[in-house]
Image (cartoon, rainbow, N blue to C red; front, side, top):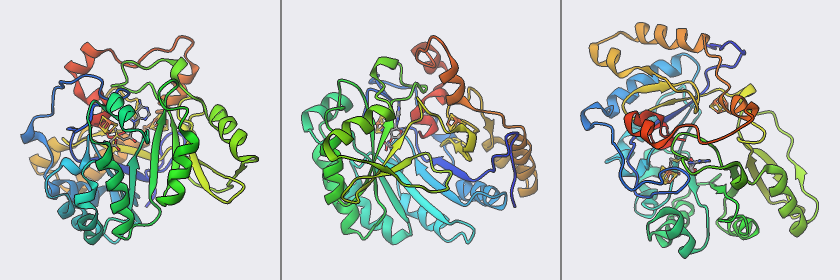
Length: 340
Ligand code: SAM
Ligand code: SF4
Ligand code: SF4
């Protein structure tokens, strides 16, 4: 089954946020200390996520990524993974985590059937981590990354949001760290998403700049040629090391974007930048049939015309997407609610 949107982009990739809560306060995502959290009774139960996943998979979704907030804060997460991993239509089941709780959970995640892990790692320096996240848990993140490999995971990725004046002097160190982890490092351009209330264009380190910095150290960098809808462009260093760049701000990939997002309380967003989503929890809890849910999802996807990052790029004056007051009124606009 394939359902296309108005730009012939199929419904393919679903990011499921399992909680909006987080144990870090990254300045580019959650710069405030206090947030308005989603009410507990509105958070989807695992069985409800499973039921929605079944409908999405019948409509073409074959890749699911669990995210958050911090997904490992969700109690008993391996149970959800077991529930999803057995679905025959699912080709890929991954997680994006900040790594703080990974050391204690990596083995159980692997045993439950999780296929791949992406850890967000912006710095190798504990003092910087503390300044960037307002928490002192850098050592736990590094232990968590080691535990991923020990648990037998392969194809691990390390995602780094590069911010000028914050961590743009660590690109080489991160690549070297990735070689030994082992994990593929991906540099992400700083995005002006909801929640990034301190964003400015000056702080964005573009793909071009990242390549220049790395070429001046390693010599000639070759692109890895591949046909995929994955957001990262991949490159190879002279020694064969592969890394990625997600140029979401300066060279958006909306044209091939097959991703949508389900929040922990069951609101479905067709774009990271979308201001409104579709409530799937309400019909689900009302007892809607699979066919009714499939009809709702199909109808919305067929009308999808979102190209959020491209529209942002076309703006002359670019400032944070949403101001704090509006985010407090509607936490669904937050990156940590959408799942990144
Ligand atoms: N808490 C988990 C984590 O940090 O990996 C999962 C959720 S987090 C919202 C998902 C990803 O979004 C992380 O890799 C994070 O670095 C990225 N992210 C958050 N805010 C961003 C921003 N303003 N620009 C680019 N990436 C951002
Ligand atoms: Fe940082 Fe992820 Fe938490 Fe956002 S959700 S504050 S990126 S750890
Ligand atoms: Fe997809 Fe929206 Fe991101 Fe563009 S901005 S790549 S359409 S989620």
